[in-house]
Length: 224
Image 1 (tube, helix red, strand yellow):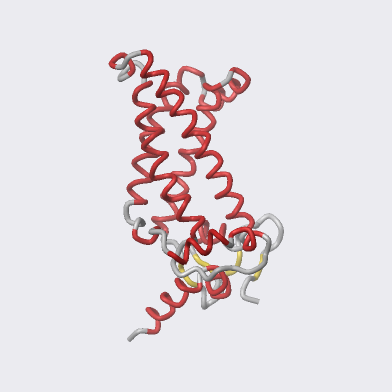
Image 2 (spheres, helix red, strand yellow):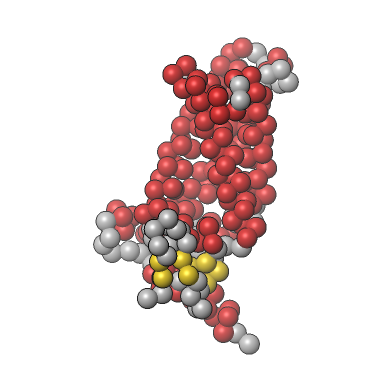
């Protein structure tokens, strides 16, 4: 077997086979997890400020006051981290005709039936997640700036701040759904979490899930 699973307690730790393929560099993985951490902190603090029922979550930050101060700064950090990482990936995330066919057959794929061949490093679902983040993160940042007290909010009218609050909540909700699907897909697709924690995948995984990318990587390795 290509995957040698270690004892319980090491869910994502496996012995690396000699023919493993690197999927993500260390810098890519660190940036990914930094973005994930920023999102979790924003989600928790945003939820605490959204409804009194979740206000107890502010204790994670030490105090409600500190949470309110940190929330917008973490939002700026999320914007910088994501676009510093994502700016290099836009070509690999362009939607192709093959991706349209993948999306049309996504239900069959989710149920373990026929799967449309994936030509690039990312499938259509991952590409949609990427482009949704490209839209939603700036929307959250801009709407957040309008509400950021005491720095920017006084410069805007009350109706505009209310409209920004609606945009902020809506964008946050859509992102929550998207990231929920993203996490579920990563856990559901065996080997995906290992790729983002250890950086490598087996050849069997690459051939099955991303055959086009696999062939490209293998050809580059075999080239003189």
